[in-house]
Length: 261
Image (cartoon, rainbow, N blue to C red; front, top):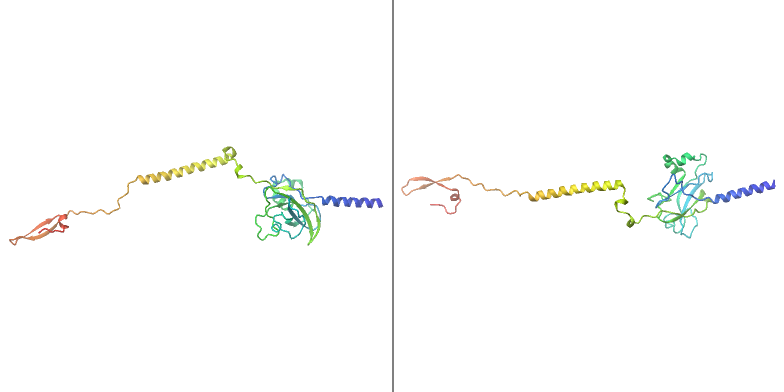
């Protein structure tokens, strides 16, 4: 009987030590083929790890940080994005293990959203930290991070995992290294670029033709033309003999400053 008790105690201690060795792992590559990215890392939640009502805190720290002390109040901004120490990136309920996921659910791409919510936590998912506490802000590119799960019962930490091995986000491509030749572009991009170039040419050609036509068209004289009347005005004159007779004055004579006598 005594040996049985010691054996059970040894098995319990062994299970406890193995549990501590559990660390956050990268999410399944078939569900998240692009993981990590430049600013995010998808991790598996501690599913069926502790069948309790505890709350799980996900801690994130940069691999070059020297301070690894956990605090439930540490945040992204107060730790300089994990450079000064671990920060809480996410808080969620311990996943329920009464209905574990099947293999078909894990690999079914139509259930990616459910898988993301129930079995995966995406570090760096928040683009805006307004009214979000904690804030799961985007990670820095080409930077190594380590992760840890801590279990809380209220404000009391009851358990924690080991730190995960460093996981490095992808490096952003240098703009100077982008291939601008046609061989570096897809067929669709080449077709769209060609169509836009042809349309631009026609627009410029039409504009140029309109300008040339306007320059070559003679301008219309907008000055009003003077109408010269051909009518004449009859003026009565007296002769020396007292006989009156009429004479016609031309237009130039009517407007002359020296009237004829």
